[in-house]
Image 1 (cartoon, protein in one colour):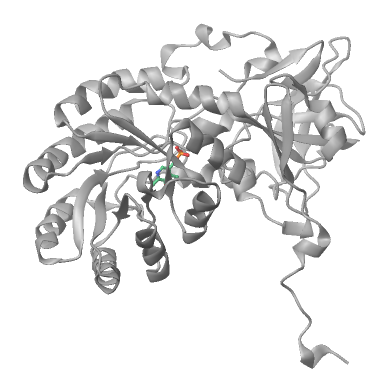
Image 2 (tube, helix red, strand yellow):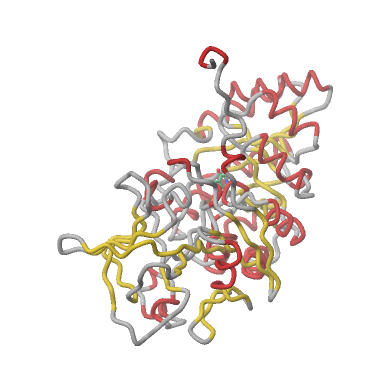
Length: 435
Ligand SMILES: *Cc1c(COP(=O)(O)O)cnc(C)c1O
């Protein structure tokens, strides 16, 4: 499933000893496995056999240029949500003709940038946005390819903060309204309808909500195929990953023992459930997964600052904080935490694993059982490749962390740790305070 494993009790990414990476580049540092990304990509690309499938990787999950280049070389297009992401894909050598531009608030400049670089389609979230795209396309003198993002009103059964396909979420056009819009489309001279899109949420661990959403949207897709000859149906992303890991227990097939409903959602389960619904539509299918492709391909390396014994409680204070990895603080995201050097002779430790930031939410795990660790020792927060660095901030004036990409025995730093000069480069003292 991923390429992080212990060799002689030392945690490796592919053939690279992670302690060596930490010594070379310091901590906190993100490390990504190119082979894991490639494996995940191939599993997704083949999960709907017999259908014409395109993968538009959701750049917001991990927008590192090297990761984008790697996915481009694997054959991916991209799901983009800002002008900055468009520029990143271009800088990485990616292809906008295989990419889509989504988001509820695209500016005129962003729409122009996407059209000028020949984006495959813009995903429309409202009537006013459709009018804006029509206007910008008119000024450029070229038609804008669009797809309608519908809101199928299904419960994704995931964390409320990452649910996007339910009535009351800001995303997408309600189905009833979408029918009206596609009638209005005839009057807009500068847009051409290419597809239908939806995305119901993130970190879904059951296939049921995907099935419900596709079943609800299918008649609309069929209708637009007849009326407008649309070419594709994008069913969005959202496949969850298992944030509990086999590493700590050392058992590879730990989830075989779990009830079926609690097993991880795999591309195979997803494809098998959706194929019968998608096949009759006879359109190209786009998949926009972000998290699934990169989450388990990345870890965050960190060093122990102190083991602090409190009132009946222990705190393992580490040098990574919520500014480096926001998921636990933002939406109760879970990460397995493992030592880089495993020592089975040590006692167990139950501790809250916390960062150095001045916020109580700066906590990666509560009452977590770990091998006893002390000052200066190294650990890894597993499955940190998605929504990790891409959500990192400089809160508490901490520099953005470094990123390293591994492939086999090769590894290279792909983002240098930020310096203080870079952190403050755009700031200045105004003239009226000088002197
Ligand atoms: C965030 C997003 C995705 C990817 O979600 P994951 O949970 O990372 O797979 C796909 N499509 C759209 C429109 C998104 O906003």
